[in-house]
Each structure stands twice: as C-alpha cells, then as structure tokens.
Image 1 (cartoon, rainbow, N blue to C red):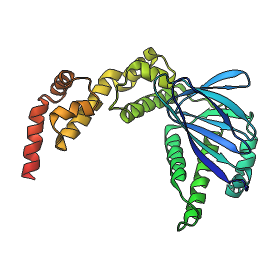
Image 2 (tube, rainbow, N blue to C red):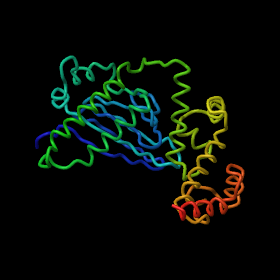
Image 3 (cartoon, one colour):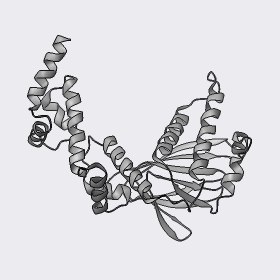
Image 4 (cartoon, one colour):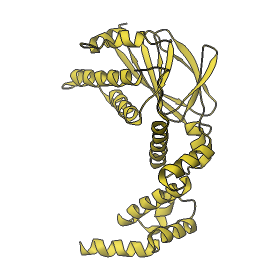
Length: 280
C-alpha cells in the first residue's frame, strides 16, 4: 500500500487512560485543543498544555496521560512524510532538513497564542477536506499544508532554549487566561481548574491576573458571564433561561450580580430591550 503524504487525527483521552503514540515513518506534531497531559520520554516525565507543540521524529514513540483531572483531553495530530516536507520546501527553507536537525527525537516548544490558534484551525480544516477530485481540492490542501509547515517551523525556531522576557511571559499568561475563560464561560471555572490547565499555582494566577487587569479572576468571570446574559436578554431570551445558559449556579446570585453591574434588575433590562425592539 502506498504511504500517504500526511495524516491528520484526533486523540481523545478521559480520566487516567494511558495512550501510546508512535510516529511511524512520519514527522508527527501534537497540539492540545483542550486540557493538558503528561508524557514519558527517555525516562523523564514532562508536561504539555494548550500552549505547547510536541514533535516526534520518524520512529519515535511515547506514552501520554491526561493531566487535566476531570476535564477531557483532546489532541490534534498531524504527520508529514519526509517526501511531502521536501515538496513543501522552497528556496531558503528545507522543512525536512530543518525538523531532522532538531536536537532530540522528541521535542516540545511553547508557541505564541496567535500562532497556535491559526495552526489548530488549519489542521482542523485539513481533517474536513475530501478527495483530490474536488474542484481545486489538491491545490487547496497543498496550500494549507504549506502554511502549517511554515507555522510549525516558526514555533520550533529555537527548540528547548527559547526564553522570553518576564513581561512577555506575564502578558502571554494573562492573554491565555482571558481567552480560556471566554472559551469556557458557560461552564464553572474554579481556580482549581485554571491551576490544572495552566500548571501554575492559583496564588500566582490570582496575583498576576489582579496585577494585569485590576480585578480578581472571579470578578472577571462574573462580569463576562453578565455581559453574555445581557446579550441573551437583548436577543429576546426569557430572563428565567438566561442565568443557567450563561453558567450561573443559581438565579439569586445572577440577580444580585446583574443589578450591581447594570444598576437595574434583569427584568427591567428585559423591558427596556423589548421597548427598543418594538420601536425599531
């Protein structure tokens, strides 16, 4: 059977399940969509989260286990054949030689948030693509694969030695926390969950968040939930449904927080929105 040029797959891990990963004859890159995980390689146990990319060279293998406790771990995997990496290469950049020259059979790096988000979206798009018979399908896929290779190469520009200045690291942490909260705002987000997801103590999270935003993590979560509630109400959703949909544990807590934030009750805000919609 002819070897495929690339493979895209999704890895789901729940609880304490241990998963074995083998790159086969490919250069494999693993990115976490949700959760974090421990992996064991060369006798060492290391940890990766949504900020890291893990690369395995051809013939490498390891085992990994979720580090997110009760939260499911979802990973994206993309594997490139050496032949495809050569085909994707251009003047001044040989992807196959570049990744082959990395110092270990298994390497992980921390990547910028924007780069991670774009790369994950592109890999997700690749997983939805059909056969090459689609109009322009092969050209479109080749373009996406080229972009993914470029972004991965940029992420691994300084493997294992890349250091960031302290202010940049703090800014990255703050951006990551705020993005994570907004992505999961309809759920309960206790500090314990953030501690597990980011592998940082809750005390450090609280201190840096307060320093960077002027408000506590809890206050930011509540305000973000309330903004979502206000949007739901403006869209015509009954007040009795809004608080649960936005992830508030109870109506009384939602009512008090809403009145404090907007200086009116949810019902009063609903009436104002109804009158505004009627006038339009």
